[in-house]
Length: 329
Image (cartoon, rainbow, N blue to C red):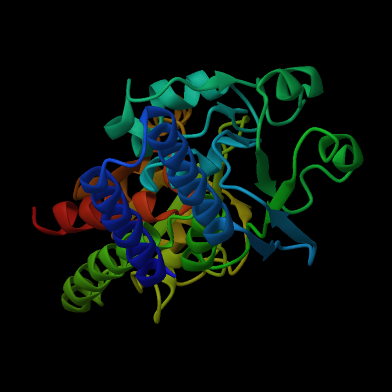
């Protein structure tokens, strides 16, 4: 199609030269030719863009033109679209907090600070239909199951694309890219991220005798294990292949300090809001059990930003570099 377009432009260019040389056309006919040329290009771009994509629910969404205004209904997709060089024009925040809070605080979004104006749609937990309508989106993006109750209202505003949050990060990246026609950028992102993961996994091969516990905390000051099946960090094939301590659960689970002591990991990675983690650690500092942990004694407590929970390309690249830095000490 690009070759045909090139031939069309060349042909119009030659005709324009011949017409100018012959002196048979007046200014009105030249203007008419320019108008026709512009229309040809626009028609070509439109025909080249027309596409139908299938989302995670199996629905087929047809686009007659490239979406220029993207509204996302959860902050976990923010860094996907920024990395794809197509910042959303509007975004809801995370389950708690606003998009502005995410833009100000998420480590995954720091490189993009001040590069785009994003209308704040409020909390992802309590979506505001009026605000979404006001943002005038060409497409609305969220994760599967998030908007079941208001889906029929949303599709009256704009096409809705739902992405499976449990899908691989590669597939989620490419699905976002298809929405805005940035498959080439997505391919580059995927390749770069896979290289970072591989580099880190190879380094970790020299530390297979050291164990890692990935944790967060709850509102009561308890430790919560993510579970080795819920993260790429323990994935042998596609992730970092971290060695998990004995007793580390498969699924998310609240664990006591005593249970953590029995695991006695060499490294503890807290992937959560820093203020919540610091508050919990302060409460445990005086405990002999906490002080007896290998990770505590060797100063192997790592703090990963809560935004890395998305395990997006950007989040995985940051995690890879954090791990390599920790292991190089």
